[in-house]
Image (cartoon, rainbow, N blue to C red; front, side):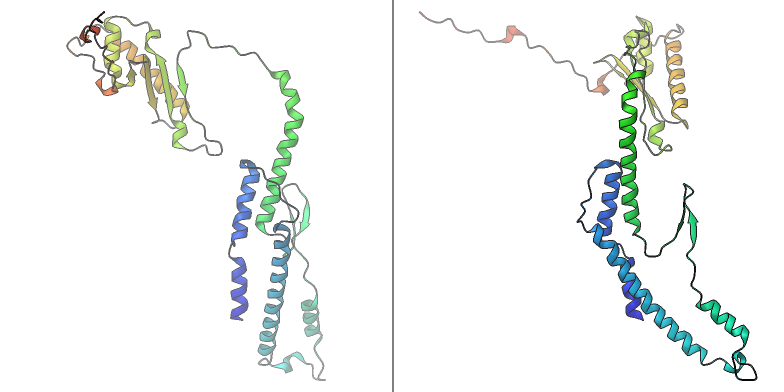
Length: 285
């Protein structure tokens, strides 16, 4: 009995082939499309497992029947017989009910198709492989049908106007809508297009601090504290308006605070003076 249970448990454990089959099913789902050969081990694996399971189940049934037979000896047999020594009709009905074959359970899938459950069906990973192949066929069929009609909806490209110089950037992860990285929004703009000059521009650069890059004249700000990307985008717009409004105020111009871009690591390359070069001696005749 212990050896049978050990063999059955060994079949339940995921083998290297099953893990490889699971990887192949994920590759067929969209990463790397590979064709399954007809003579591959997939066609041999399922029948072998079904035969091994059937043999183990038969051995378990025989052992359980022997245990039931041994337990019946302890029961009072006279209770199952009538005064004439024949079996009671109620007991005959119970025996007939036990001898009747058990009907297979019927179930309905998502499409409404009724099918009977089979205990000797294919392995779960084989079903995953078949489902991935169906997905590839579905999208391939959709590609051939819908691609010719896309030209009717095409429109010429129109570049954005000069007034639309604010660029908002965000990332989108397909399949997961609750990632914190997708809420982050990045704002990029050219400071020269804001129309600030003189003291207003200097005060604006003091307010933004290290977010300004003097090499490419670009201001970069990000926000990820709100619950959605739209709210973070609105916060960035409100912050930019508040910075421009504060730069235009004339109450305090921060004249004693110098502009310092040393944190950016920006160092202008010095030009070597040509006067320091050694003079070449005139060639003698």
